[in-house]
Length: 425
Image (cartoon, rainbow, N blue to C red; front, side, top):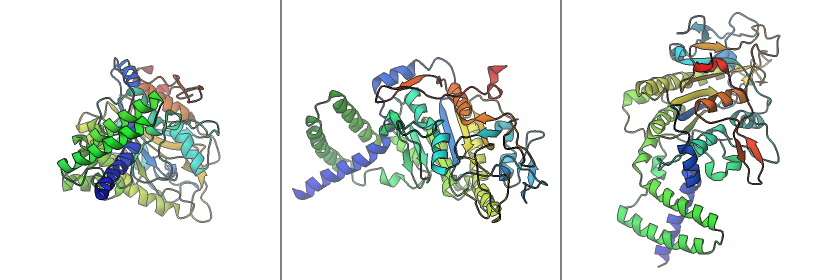
């Protein structure tokens, strides 16, 4: 009897571990109804964020200034966009820049890693009175996920500060996979179907006891939905989206033999399955010393993975329905310090964005090649970037959501970037 009870508890622990992360897909019917109202216009339906953790150097990636005092040894190469050059460490991406837009004048209000990450992921500065949701959490919350049996918001790879659900609730946090491609073994039951059914029957007894102890109807309803969807997920064929062993060796090599490469491959598989928002993290960009070696090493992982992800999205007719964004919490200083490094720089850095029907093959903004001007030409606040992305996803960035204490807050306080919008004139 004790052994059987332990099995029940083990099943309950498995459920709690899974449902805590997969709660993002547990939308109430009211949310699904609201999402149905948004389906009239053909717009982008998914977002992929390639998160460059630590703050990538714009001068060693998308905005090189070779032959200048601030440029260092970084070389630049031509791209598929006439007049646009990027760092020589990104040769495969250079061939594909015609499918993307480069923003070289992104601005943030925070230069600390944690605060900067919060600001760039949410569009809001940290506030002790409220925790804002990451844009990656807002997308599935607003668009709905009734067709999914797996999470609608997934974070692949490391990183100290993954996307959070904020005032939307912890159930809207990103579901984290630290080692992409190797995670499915922890999600599927390791016993036969019949034995799993017996375990789940015991879990149902525990759950009924739990519900009986709760008097608030909303809690009981959400708990029941969580159980139903989490258990359905554990036996869902959609879990195969997290696996890469079905991919050919050539595909794996094309994305690159790295956790980030596998993460980008899993991201493509998740988008194919219908996941709304995926974040893939590449860490190690914080180059206060040995900047040039550090950035080159990161680009060696970024280049094949990003390029292959673009190729596959386009080949599978997913690019027009998927917005892809590559950025970090800030850039690096134009000035090279005494340790051959670059420090934090939120006042004019780069990001790359494309897909989802956005304009491509262009550069927005510019930075001073001599590093004397602290403000970029045509500055683009982070909030404006997110307002534009949300608009393209058929989400009104000015819509107010209600916090648990009844406070209305706009999803985003930015303005649209006309140069990114095809119908902006």
